[in-house]
Length: 288
Image (cartoon, rainbow, N blue to C red; front, side):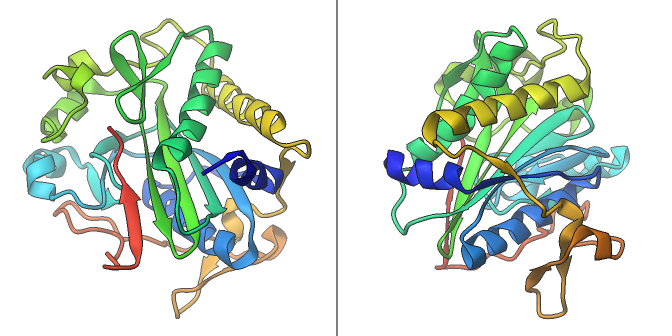
């Protein structure tokens, strides 16, 4: 992957406004935007917040190995599966997410893709006066504590990159529901979730959720203007304009004409995934 590809992605970038909705709806919207990206040669950036506590499994994870499913059921924590690699994460109202969907060539440099997300997050942290740096494959850490991670997937001529930025986190729920990962970046050094993770609040950021989101968007737009003379543009497509039809193909409609949004993805507390695994057609890259 070279600068020409990145310039092409950001030249056509459309920022998609999303209303507050469930984690499983947001994951399905990522899939929908991926379909639109490849079908219409469009690039989308979407920022969204978690909702009720939901554990999101990486695509290849075994639920009973990654999670304490009894604790999930006891605490009412939903379990869904995302289409990208990496480890399980807890989503709630304090987790800011970004999703980038774009057309992509057949051969990609995963590290170059990850650098798009890490650059956005490091820039956002700088705007919030927090010093972050890339650690492991795609983590962002403050000192030696993780505040952001990302994962990616390539599917039928398109790329999905998504990641998190922790504004605040419920460590007690994380400790109860998420087992220690089977694989971990070297800098974690066997530490518990409580000792390994940090958040903007813990780093002294007392701004609102909106200020954190604005910092991430400003960082993305700054990156855009640095790579493309054209910059990003606001998209007339909003999250509520993606609907599913019986064939499973996502279609776009103007927001004003849109009916109330349907439920796109299934969730469960027994570890069953919300997405099919299309063997032989997709590639995934796990975060470090």
